Length: 140
Image 1: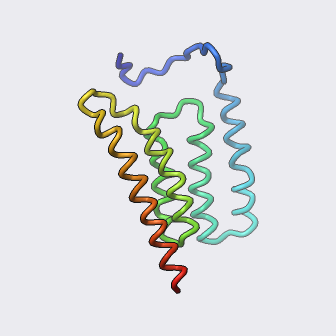
Image 2: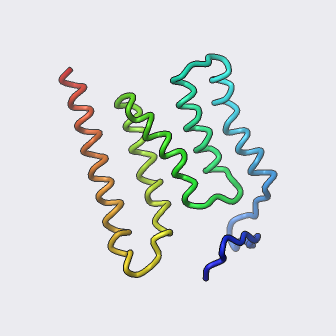
């Protein structure tokens, strides 16, 4: 059933119920070390990494987060992947579960082949890109 964007509390059968105040505190706690590091040594590179980590923490610890919310940290990580092989590997490791998290958005029966093909194609492409980048750096 489609809810048209309506958000209602749902009791859980196995997991404990979590209130919004707890997730706010958890998000702030996850962000504190990152923000402290950027505050101590402000520059462009740590700021870009911090922006990616802060958006990822908001996705991971948010109270009501839609699947599409992973796209913000994924886009930031993709931009950081251009800086070197370490960032490229980090992006590849984040992108695989991020793409998997988007699969519930493809729920029609006609979309099932795409649900299978998209993650497999991405995984193969990411592995080839990381291997090619590593090989190029080893030759240099």
